[in-house]
Image (cartoon, rainbow, N blue to C red; front, side):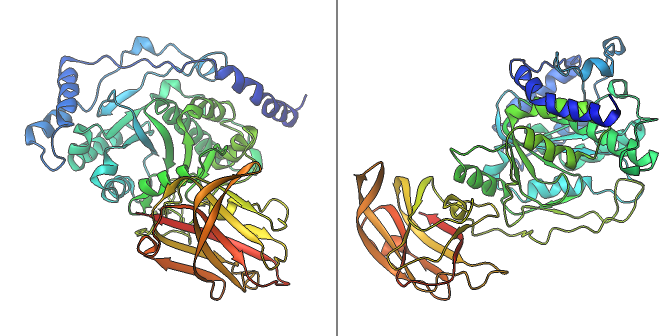
Length: 485
């Protein structure tokens, strides 16, 4: 069996392997914590009840003094073959360079892996953006884990000192941890297969990066409900956590493995935390085969998510000018990024129905999702409807509906109206509203109205787009956005 056939065989076996992994628990050994470390842990718990802005200089000094816990060399008895064996959990003894994990589980962990760059360093700016773009309430629900993955100990010490000086209060509050997976746990990174005719140093760089990410992901498996990967040269949108939560809510009841909040590289990729052990194993198993962002698309496909689910506008932007590989120029930018997202719709859980003829898989639910998809129906006729039935009655503040796309500007709703209804009643196998009130007509394919709660006397159970005149053009409903009181 040649090397290509071997790789294909491995890929086809991954689904079976993942079923075995589900029955396992991911165990971790921790570095021995000194008496000083215990004091730090107590301090972390105490500071959960202290305002963020109040940090004593003594606390900062304590963080700096305990920034590195020396490992026990006798523990490094595992070989890389042990780590990448799917019959056991990934068992790495991490070094805690700053911060300690708390018992309380958060909503979202943000993972960053960073190495020394030949030109430029954006890690501190990335961490700063994460915290500055989050409200105080959002900060309570996030945890940031930074993996300093470079083997240069002098560089790590400098970075830890900078991080602890600039973000001491976040470390004390348990929102920021800095870790390192020792070099002893890495595979041999020289003489690897040169797939895609990459030069040897490029193969080494991307292979090590896969292992860096695998160890980071493995560490973060039990910290929160969800996990998002960022690179170390990223700028965040304002209140990105709130936007992520709204997208997750809008997809409730649907199956997904990966949600993408940026179209670039390994930036803004969101996972369920229960999938992280499998993802870590997957990256280790194929670490030398291809770059990490390529591996991620295979991982998603193997877990039966066929299509990319990408949120638009993007929540994270690449800001680095120099790549971490050889300091080469990297000017990639996400043109869908918006830094100020003040007007994020709520889109409460609902079921959708239409009697229009749907084209291929452009079904009704795609118009209501926050991801970059849409509903596409064949030429609608007078009386055709597109109905949204909310799980619970809601008070609506604002509604916005857009039809057509840039490349199909004529596939808009040329003649239509929007109604809201109450008085839900059973109808065949579904529910529907018995009465509707018309809020207005579509203009140039779009509809927008504010202060809905001041215009109608009841809580809304249903919303209906009503075609008022037959059209020969097809209809794209690009987005339906609802803001609740």
